Each structure stands twice: as structure tokens, then as C-alpha cells.
Length: 383
Ligand SMILES: Cc1cc2nc3c(=O)[nH]c(=O)nc-3n(C[C@H](O)[C@H](O)[C@H](O)COP(=O)(O)O)c2cc1C
Image (cartoon, rainbow, N blue to C red; front, side, top):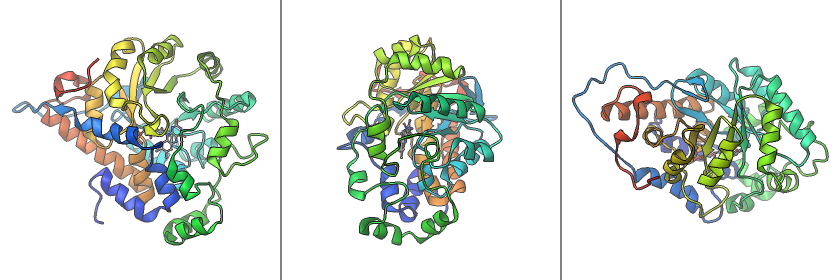
């Protein structure tokens, strides 16, 4: 394929390069995948207002998220096993984000460790926390994020237990891949991916291996999650984490107005309206459809961010118009990474940036900070 022009182009390229179990791990949702699809589809139900003959020079997409300068209101979402889309994936994506002037969020379940990512970046990145039963491990993880200079902690609230993705079970997903006939066939057809992977030593869960005790089956994400993640996690734990961390705190995975109010009561700096990219509760509403209600409920108390289904700069603009201070992208950057490594992540960000810039201009606006509901012509999702 020639130069990728859309996120869909990057997805096509990633499908060719990445072994099926890892491509499918990104391109999947829970059960019937209805919420995964709704996240994308509902953006297209919002229509923009075309304006003409206004000065469109000197446009700016720069803004802030939780007080941090960003070149556009887009951050890279935390995604597990990113170093399996491409060797050293988290380090490459973090560098691409830094160069693009947008935040990178490292997942607890990353392949490259906090320290690996720190070693290749010069600006602070954000760290996403899954809360494990072993609170000593959680404390050490938070300490490592602080020592690495991470400038925000993103606590994920919507994965106390793991939603089921059929493709992962059928493909025998594990990191590193276990040697079975099924996995051997998946790897045999992706020689470039395999060669890159042979050149790196980072093939396990970098934040966990050597740091957590009593880990019995680390290669199996679902088994480990079931064993280690804390199903009793509560709002009191969020307060404990907030005190322990002492810095900027974002709560990720809010899809309900009452939960948004509870999050605001904790004194967090922001929430991410999210259903985990449709990977947890299949049948839940799309993120963008819930955004106006959640902004109406708590938008005056903390920043409201959004993720789920953002596939273009137009989607970012729509989310901002409906009250999101910023957005996060998961699959779009993973496809870029799988397709081309670091230049692919850069391509994903630049595709989104260009689409947002042109859309903003054609809506008659020059500054992302002036975007409000006035750029929307039709919106089926009201507060
Ligand atoms: C492959 C994959 C792995 C993910 N792993 C994590 C994770 O480790 N922690 C987390 O909080 N969210 C995780 N998520 C959810 C993302 O942070 C984000 O909510 C979601 O991808 C947004 O939807 P989008 O992919 O449509 O942009 C993951 C998503 C994907 C696609």
C-alpha cells in the first residue's frame, strides 16, 4: 500500500504484519462486540455545521489536558501488550507521542517497563494503574512511576474482572506466544515481526516480572488477571491511591452520571468517559453518547476526557464540541505501530491532526479552544 491516508489504511497494513493473535487482541471487543461497534458508529450520527467566508488563517489545535500543554487534544491511551504489536512498542510509541507533543500513557500490563520507557523519553509520560490484590505491589508500582517522573496517574476503574473476548481464547493469546501448532502457524506467516521480536529481550510483562511475588502464570493474561486483579476495588481505594500518589489523578472507565459524581467527590483532576473500547461490558452505551450527560453532571468540577471509537480528527472535534477537554486513542495508534513501528504512530497522530485542522477550518473556527456545541448541526445525544 502507498502512503497511509486514514486510520483504516494503517489497520489494513497492521493486519498484514502482525500475527493474528496480537492483531485480533487489538481489533476485538467483548462478546458480540456491539459496544465496540457503537463507539465508532455513534460518532457518525453527529453532524457538523458548515460555515463559510470567515478568516481561516493562523489556526491552532494547542490546548491543555489536566494543565499540561498538548499540541492537540489527543493522548495515547494505555494499552496492554503494546510491545507485541511491534518489538519495543511502548518505547517507540512514547517517543512518537513526545515528538508530536501529546501525552503517552503506559499501561500496567505493558511489555516494556516504566524504566524502559523512561530511558528513551525526555518529557514525563503518564502511567495507568490496575489495582492488584497485593497492595504492597501496588505501592511499589506507584513508587516506580513517581521515580520515573510520571506526571499523571490514570487509575482504571472498569476492569476489576475481565470481560471475555472470544478471539483471544480462540487464538490462544499469550505473551510471549506459547509454542503450539496454532501459534506457530500464526507466527510463520509474519517473518518481519518475528525478526524484530528476536532482536529484543522485551517479550514478557515488564512491569510485573521480577516485581510481583507469587505470580503463577504470567504468560496467560486472562489467568493472571483473574488471579491478581482486585474484584473488591472501591471508591475508598481510589482515595488511598490519591493520597499515596500525591500528583495529578485521572479516573478511567466512567460511563454513568452517578459514577462521575462519585469520581468528582474524590477530588480527582479528570475522568475518562470510557467503556474500555467495548472490551468489558458488551451492551453498554457508546462513550460519545454518554459524554453530554456526564459533562452536564460534573463538567464544572473536573476535566472530562473521552476515549472509545475515535478514528479521525473529526471525531476528536465532535468530542471537544460536546464538552471533552481531551480524547485518548487506543487502536488507532496500535494499528500505526503494528504497521510501521514508530513512524506508524507518528502517521496515526498526523492523520488525526490534519483531519481535525481542516474540519475546524471548514466549521469556520481557528482555535480549538473556541470549539463548542456551535459547530454541531445535529446531535442525537443530549444531556
Ligand atoms: C489492545 C488493547 C489493550 C488495552 N489495554 C488496556 C490497559 O492495559 N489498561 C487500560 O486502562 N485500558 C486498556 N485498553 C483500553 C484503552 O485504554 C482505551 O480505553 C480504548 O482502547 C479506547 O478505545 P479505542 O481503541 O476505540 O480508541 C486497551 C485497549 C486495547 C484496544
